[in-house]
Length: 283
Image (cartoon, rainbow, N blue to C red; front, side, top):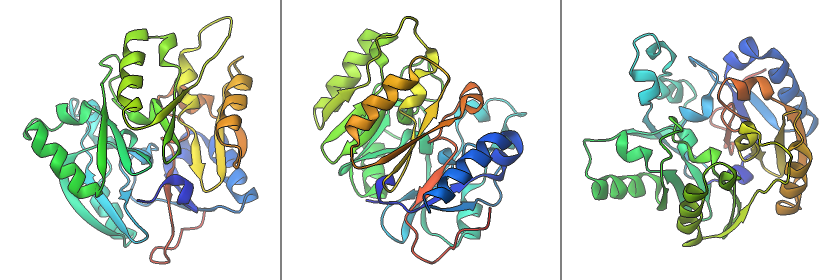
């Protein structure tokens, strides 16, 4: 399985440049500084490319799923934002196997030999029995899955706002306990069955509801791009993540406007390990 720490390319939707030109400029300049190849994705309909881009299985193979999230299909006016991920894969000449299972890429976190998802995937695929869906997901991803509870207060149901891989046997969990102690305990219990769990903790005067964004950082190879929110959380977040990833270069970038719109650095990026079949487009 290809993890983001194995990747050497970052791809962005052109919508990021048009909607948040300052973030686009800062991110591409950072990637250029650290010699990370960057490309733009054709045929996108919004900037949250992590959600609709395929999952890389190995050097040359990808899984392309059905991108029809309920938060975009319930309203006819929102359906125009649904990117045709199959057409994108064809345009990029990716060797992808296709599935009709409804998935968000933001609900796929690779950690060791497992993929971590929230149980929202079951709600979005009512035509499958739970056991059948698990078997099919394991067949598609060629690995075991670990499921976290879906916090219904968070409509997206994305695992990338909850947890991040540190190593094959360790994960980093967001500061869920600051907002829902019972949910935090259950998430940690499930993660602990397969991983050692580190938790982000903040001793700050006031809770910041944006603090989920720190776990939603971008990883590409040995580079981490961490959100900068202009909050008293910024410094302790950096210190803790630096401790967890001592072999990585960590750069902070102000993406507060994107976070206010509902997504973080992982959400606006798609990472892949290049194999020469689809060279990155010029930025």
